[in-house]
Image (cartoon, rainbow, N blue to C red; front, side, top):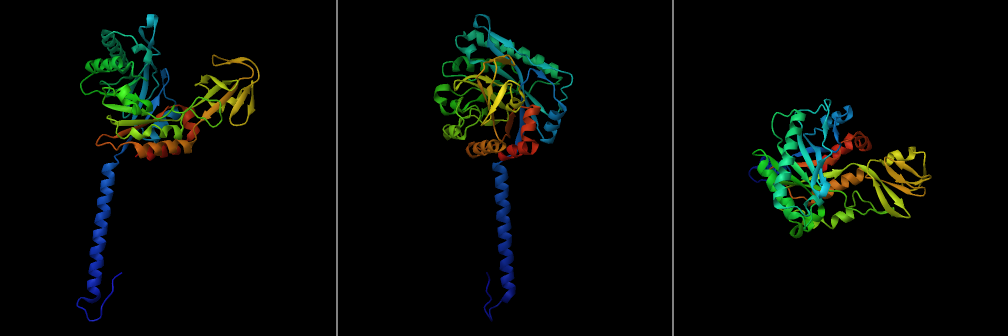
Length: 367
């Protein structure tokens, strides 16, 4: 508030001048603060994982990529698992259909899933041999996709442990030597590898992708959740900001079904969405998204016995936003490169479960 003193030089004109100067200072400070905030919170690269063995987008999936301004797709390339005599074997190589219709503006990042057991007893030369096999298969994938040049990024998905770290890291270094100059290497990172990094080590890659899911308990208890549990996550987040790799983040949008027998989990039906359970003719609905099996039968190759209970587990839109906010509060702000936020995984049933507005809010929560 500005008071005028009678007879004082300047009168009300001086008061107005002071008001204008004060207003200009406040506007300048506001602009400076806004500019600083923009520097601290760079734009997010929005992405999906695609985790099927045949790569072909439906019309709804194509629209989702466009409407959500997705600029990166993490494409499951193949798995590496123990084969004959425990030798690494490449299985499930993705088949690219002519109708995948992926925009050239969307960067494809091939993801190689490596079973941890392949690194338990391999000789040093075996890592170089495996790296050459993986590199050749990724080259073939690039040709199948019709990409004019090498992939800009390769991602490795392995839940390594302290006993396999050295062999896994040797494989990573060998693959880097075989990759085109400038190719980024990234690796999936689990929460336990964040918290116990002295034991498990930090992989020799350029970036990490924090898989922010599968942190709860597989349990028959109604309150226990295995996909996302905020209380369980809190036990691992204390060291997240100081992790020595720049981190991207993956959030879950899938649902699955647990198979219970005598109150204990005996199976996981990953391909069975809980929304399908009420339509089955061999179950009786119970409270809390549970269904009792009324006769012994098979469901997508899994034997269900009469009396088994199927427990559906779905993450609500509110839980998904909560997970994103929890990450935003604990992840270090990237110094320069844009952080990627990926949703796992791209499928019509997952898109329909949440709707595009809810998924866009999830992306925005990590900006």
